[in-house]
Image (cartoon, rainbow, N blue to C red; front, side, top):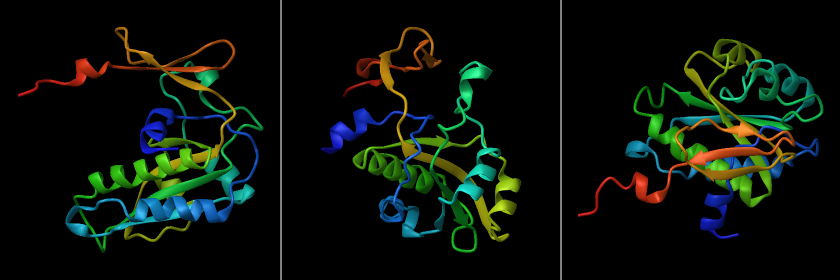
Length: 191
């Protein structure tokens, strides 16, 4: 798969088959994040891999899925939960500020890398930070910034033309539809 295919294939996935992801692949995804551009090359991002079922189950209760969907369609059903998570941390002793762009670049590398392995992902910010920090025993100098839910996809998601609303939706068969603005609509000017 080339980079263009990966970019256009990447969609947010919230329902997963229960096949495990190997630790080698999870480490490779973090390796992709590790080499992302960082402001001033100060590398303050660190990551937690959650793959064991007991911790996954506890973490699952501390994250919220799909705010635009009706309540009964948001959270993955039993047996369709993520099979792994990558938690994005900032070590504030290394980098106390200006890390938001670093996070965006690193997370996008993870998401695109996941597609390369046939893995679905969901970048999540609606998380219970303090409880996650406690659950994972994260020291005080770290900020928990995001959770990336991972697993082999058990749903389909398609890009649709934007038609007056950014809200994504599901068909009765569970297929996700995500509106995106047209290329010509996002190019402000050409000089």
